[in-house]
Structures are given as structure tokens and as C-alpha cells.
Amino acid sequence: SLRRPRRHPLFYPFPSHFPPRPLARSRFAPSAHFPLFSPFAARKMSENETLAKAAKDYPDWTKLVVFDEKGSVVHSSFKADEGELKSFLSAFDDRSQTIGKGFVLDKDHYEVHRWTETLAYGRRGKPGNCQGICLHKVKKEDGKVLYAVVTWGGYATSARIVPELQEFCQKNVVTMT
Picture 1: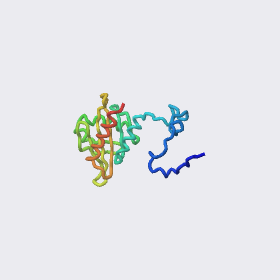
Picture 2: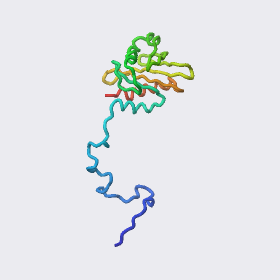
Picture 3: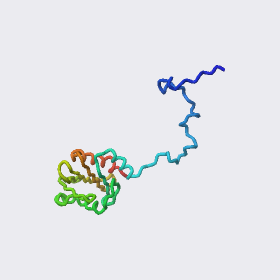
Picture 4: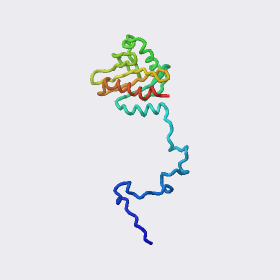
């Protein structure tokens, strides 16, 4: 019989030059090996997983915690104390109280030197060896209030981290269900 010899794969310079395969023999055709509810099917991520994945885009953050108006943790990158988080709830009631008391997170005290209606931030330590903290108050689409606290160290500055936290909250925290 006159059969055409099979060509070596390197003979074809581009994938479009490969001879077409019939659909029935395709490796990617639907089959019984991968049913509809399989471990390979995409699943919906939880809020905690979604926030954790989004927080990986900000490598300068050392700690992140998102909590609600009752002090209950929604997401945390460390073991957050709910007693400490409840002290953050009154941070936007009185400016002088907040700047006077400062923040305590993970048993570290931070001095607060900037305060607005939805942002308060400060630092601890000495120049060259300091850590910063920022508290952001966010109102979700359904009217609930959430708070996000982030800390950072090293050579990162509040001029960069504070807008990053605002962006993170706008993209991820506000849109949570």
C-alpha cells in the first residue's frame, strides 16, 4: 500500500501546520473520566481565600487583618486578638483620643500621627528601624462597615502603603458578599 510516512514533530514549524486531528480521538474531548463534580472542576473560593490571594499582591505588608463592626475577624494573616481589635472600633469617634492612645496590635504599641474620617496611621520604633500601621474604615455595598489594618516594615513608607490599602479595600473588601 502507498502510505505516507509519519513526519517528525520538529518538521512542523508552527502548531497550525500540524495535520488536523479528528474530534473523537482528541485528548480534550469530554469523557466519563472527568464528571461534572470532580476535584478538577473549579470551585468558588471563600472570602478568606479570596482576600489571602489578593493580599499576595502586596509583598511589603507584614500583617493584615480585616474585621467587622463587632470585632469579629473576617480575614487575618496572623492570630489576631479580638480584644485588641475592639479597641480599633472607636478609633474614628474622637481624633484626640485616637492620637493620644495610639494603636495596639499583636501586643505592639504604635503611635498614631495621621487621622482622617476613614484613615488613621502611624508607626513605632526609631528611624531606620520602624514599623508602620494603617487602619482603614470601609463601607460595603450593602451598608455594613468593615475595618482593615495593615502593618509594614523595612523601607516601605506610608506614602505608598496607605494608597495600596485603599486600593485593596476598594477592589476586594467592598465587593465581598
